[in-house]
Structures are given as C-alpha cells and as structure tokens.
Length: 120
Image (cartoon, rainbow, N blue to C red; front, side, top):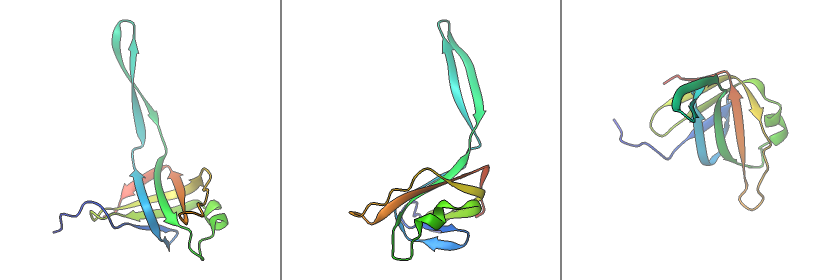
C-alpha cells in the first residue's frame, strides 16, 4: 500500500490518452448547497443540481487536435489519480474554450456530464 496522494495522473477521452501537464480536478458532486440567510439570521439552505466535471491541463503535443476534442459529446472521460482512485465521467461533453498557450505548450480542457463515478 502506498502513501502517495498526489502527483502522477492519467487522463483519457474515449480511450485516447492525453499528456497531463499540470492540474487535474475531479468534481463528482451532483448537487450544491447554498446557505439562505436574511435579516433574522440563517433560515436554512437550498440545494440545486449541478453538472459533475473533470478538468485537466494537458500538453498540446504534435498529435493533439483541439478541434476533435471540442466535438466530444456523449463521451467517456477518465482520470486516474496518484492516490489510486479512478474516476469516470460518462455521457460527457466538452465545455468552454480551450485556449492554447504557445509559451507553455498547454491548454486546459473541461468536460461536464450528469454523473462522475469512482470506478476504482
């Protein structure tokens, strides 16, 4: 058993592995709570559904095709984290713009979907 909790990360979209450059964030929560306060104090909270997501900074290698990545919808995105956890975001679609940094050779891509599950 390892005590490693951070570092190495593997990221795939529809089985194609990308070269992770930096941050990789997995957010599996299906709802978000917000406290409700008023002049009389705390009244409680509201809970709203939210899209789960996986966001990662990747290197823009020679084979990296941002246009193909941008077309992903109803895809499967996986993140294998250094702590041994593997997360799968199914029925995922790419959101937002992915500006490529020529200085760093990187871009950040984000996929959202209805559910992100731990598979290992």
